[in-house]
Image (cartoon, rainbow, N blue to C red; front, side, top):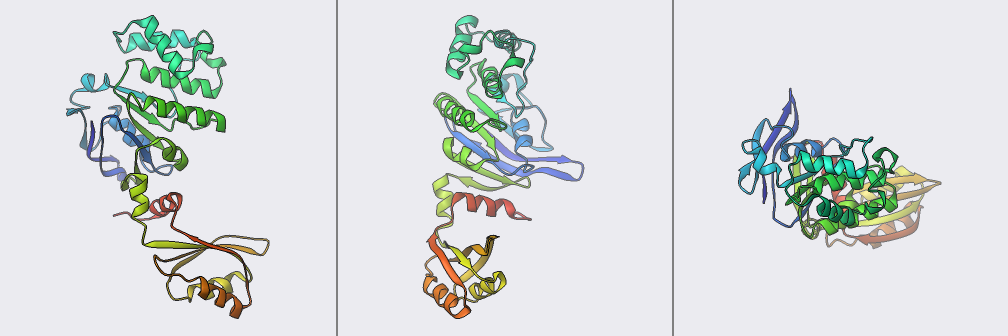
Length: 312
């Protein structure tokens, strides 16, 4: 089990992390989600012991990562955003080097073959790393994280820079690895976290703003309902007339192109304003091209959580 307790990290007057706490159970795949600059990589580096926190602690099975680094790191495999590869080595030479560096005790030849089979590196095992594609280099990064057969995998932005096919392949690989390892996946890409994670922690400006399953995060916004409207008319007149409708909490124009307005109307959960919208359009002389209602999506909730200027 991983326990992150009240972690704060300062760089001068700047707080990269502000009293961050969360835990990860054995066998869980946790998505650590936030926009660029939210503090994700700082948190990953502290969890792995590469940097120290200003205050707070990280425990792996009850052992502090700074006070007992050898005992905790042997249970961890880390894939940073930029994999630490030696490009003039072949894949085999590099993995053998990592094996010796980590003082691994497993049978070298058979263990390396098992990892390469799992990760999909058999076809490039004897090739120089510098001649590999971005996707294969990322796979080599995964392989080095698995050399010591760790209980825990820390993956920091594992699909950055990959093409769509490679992203799908890496996501499938993470799901496969999650059957044998506890995984923390740091990302700013919501679909990536949704696709593979059991639980989501959302960080913004160094603070945790959500920590739950996708279903429970969505359920927390059950009292809200959005109306999605495509209208045609003068933008300000349309927005003013919609904001005047009883039950409307917020009106946002997401896009105005070619005379069409793409509008989101936030309302109280059980308040049905569709009839009032039709009446407003008729009296205001603007047209409704399309309208439907739904609960907020996880993407919309994520954007709302991470757009907050002040959290807490």
